[in-house]
Length: 640
Ligand code: ATP
Ligand code: MG
Image (tube, rainbow, N blue to C red; front, side, top):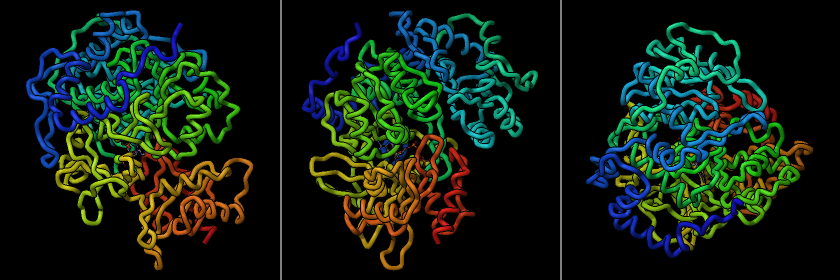
């Protein structure tokens, strides 16, 4: 029998968190040194826990130490129990999945590592991974790290041009892909997209192709190789290559919500420690758990919480190929029941979709669920409550985890079963994170509680990014030169009377109306309380009278009509929830909002449209459905 609570949380309560947190801030070397030796296996011990400063942008952790990521994720668990399930693969079609044990994973990773070596991949080389959510994606990650290569994953929904840019920027010489992908009942021509992208990447010498559907695909002899044919040639064990703690583990481009995507670099030991530590304490992972992160491996959430955290801790990770809407809106909940999932982690955009679809789809028992995570955007209180009551049956704990590609792992978040929660607040800092609220006008830190400003961190932590690939100056300018001595997140935040943090969204997304600094997230949360609202995005536009004025874009639920009366109701909703000063001056009812491929709303596009600068939208390569832009432009024009 699988018990709901295999044991108590790792910490006895909030007092133990406070005590450990204090140690992590006042004696970080002692704290992280202990955790690094407890959670990771080293082939050579480190002597120096940390060196460098935020001002210098030269932070390094666990110097002199050596380890291997794939050994930590696979070998050590395979040696203990080769039959333990590492990967639960839930294919796009509900009946087509399979499981992969730690023993099998070690063999697959070894063979694939051999293949990469034969293709000329050496320690420090970058390998582009353009794979859908299948077990081989995890095998590819781990095969790279096994030989000390650097993976550069590109979300397998990106266009040929976006893939090309990332392959060139990262200087990858090998690309790993499939013949096709399958998602939500639709086929995606991944190999064809790779072929198109590579027309302008002369430096790519090899393409390794995993046969997912068996489709007929174009083939370039001498460059393209079938995965199944290549792995058959090589033995099932290859020794892991020990690397230095600070050797790069991977490169990952950010979502591009605010501009040109940044090639964020993470190094080995610090990143792995962040993944393992947050997996253990935030998600309360225990031996025997079945962990399901719905994020794609093409994003940081998939890196840290589909691959590294669960595998480092030796539990089973669900790899889901499909979408929450296929074959119907119960898909997530069916997966959770079928695999007795203990932790589930997803973005608010998916939750809004499922809430909009209706509670009748959430009939499932899900009795093993202990933790429900949210990530990627502020979660409106309305959606938080729905998650807690309807999905979690008021028993699973919600963890609203705030973090970024650059932070590597969760930085402000409740610890499941330990931290008291408030709907809409990411709560308290994780170990080693010392948040500061800064006044954006004076640049001074604002001390005490009940304060608002921009969010920065005062102390370095192991899983922080070390550079932006090939653009260290951009790294310094974006994160460290804005407020000297701080890491700047780019997000606005408030610290309430109890010291809890409320993330307000990006600094650029703050609206200043007659001197009131309003967070777009707060106004959006108010709008979503109206029963006809499915999703909303709020931006500020220049206003002669008030400096800036609030404009709202709203996608309405089916069965509602875009009438003036409804627009008035939306304005009233905001007046009532927040106050008259926050009331939108204009409300545009649109079919959909511009979102990145990771589901984040791109407010900068809306700002440009309102400013009449449709021809200067900037980098839109990460938009998931570029056609919504024209539809929104049409709505705005009609209204004027
Ligand atoms: P880019 O940096 O290219 O503009 P991005 O910031 O969207 O893209 P990510 O690193 O994927 O790329 O996202 C991090 C951002 O997501 C955070 O800075 C924050 O704005 C938002 N975010 C993440 N988690 C939360 C959360 N729990 N609550 C509120 N906002 C969140
Ligand atoms: Mg960002």
